[in-house]
Image (cartoon, rainbow over all chains, first blue to last red; front, side, top):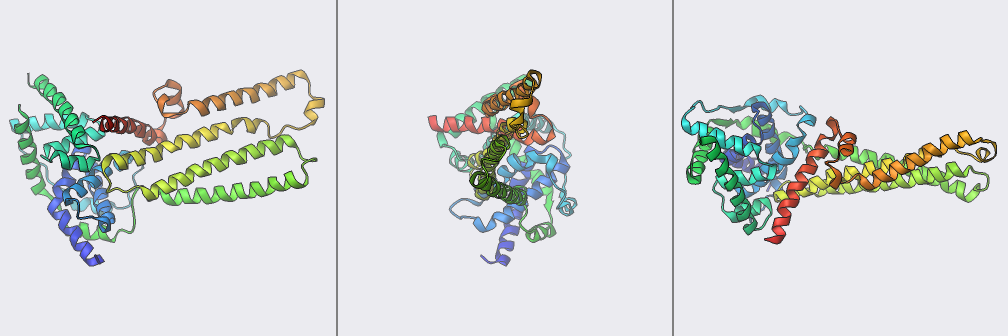
Length: 168
Length: 223
């Protein structure tokens, strides 16, 4: 793939799958400014890996791998992050939802629960809530399908307990 | 609240937010102009520099020490010679760790599955522990560099007691630290005392992540 095609492909996948980047960043970064830095970092990593894209995997699997790997590992070094590419930050616009309905409260509870999870459990939870199949989750995380089932079962138990405590 | 309801809520909300989340074309254009930049990549120059300086230092040291061993061993201060040899050997070991880190940096693939990539990144970070173990192991030789043969004839008991106290204590401490600075002791007080401070946060966090990776791997094997 020549550079022009790579650029076009990059723009297409970012536009079509920006939700993945956004969801991951939102889960790992409660702070909006930090979140924009993380999204930018993920985009840079996607661009720099685009030549390695292998179509044996679904594009969403590939994007989830990059986004989660960046979110888990690179972003933990927030104190050492550089300001190299801040020129991009101001141009990524995020408009938060204003609706504060009961559903919104439930969603807040869910997000709070996810934030309290450990890094890899968080990844598993995002994929589960996104309704990914156990096979795809296994491919993204690099674990067996049966292990995915076990892990999801445990997190669901915790979630149930948490919700029943908070709602009662 | 049932889980289907929760999933639906999560998806609807994210879809709604996603619609209002805009990435301008200019952003993606700008990113395609960024030349090979990533946080891990930024570690490469410093590792390569350290490796080159280290190779130069050990190279000069080996040449100088070999020349003393071969040509003037009988006249040389053996305390200095043996101390310098040990120090040089330990520095060479540290260089191998830097080389390992450099190779790992080149091998890490951000598009690999999460557990594999994270395991590589964690072991990269954890190898910093080895560098520290080796640094501590050098402690006793810094107390013997300056020894000489006149000490054997001219020194009184008090001078010997003080000197040996430092050398033996440093030897004991360095060996103890070499053996005990390891992942398994990460929660001990003394360990957290040595590795406290901002610069060690990524290392401590890596250890926490290693627990998670190990946990997932364990279940992977038993599944």
